[in-house]
Image 1 (cartoon, one colour):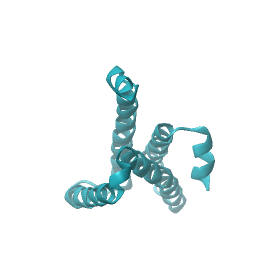
Image 2 (image 1 turned 135 degrees about the horizontal axis):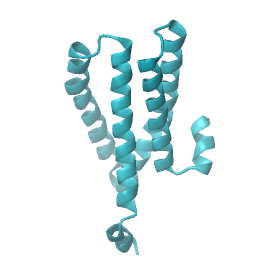
Image 3 (image 1 turned 30 degrees about the vertical axis):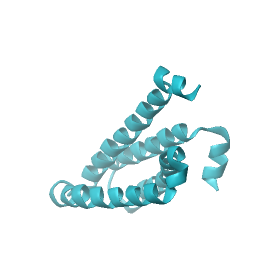
Length: 135
């Protein structure tokens, strides 16, 4: 419901940056704040809201150029997501994340990657080459 309200006023790219910003805020709060139950619940709730905004927007952006191959693209996206999660998240948790602040730093790094990719996509979408191909 929140996403439907936001979609009326903002583009998908803006919502991806906003969701990345929420994850960034969550990571900063987790890194700097005291480790309490309320802090943990608040930061994880904020992160859940962010992913609720990010995931549908990113899937929509992923499928938009390939409407005729939605099933294939969706399957490839899911397989890539699961494969990268298995290869990256397991070792990250096993060898690096031992304190809540470490998880906060990981969220900050992930959010910065999300925001950077979204901004690069906006720049690419507005490049003269792409504008010429749409004309």
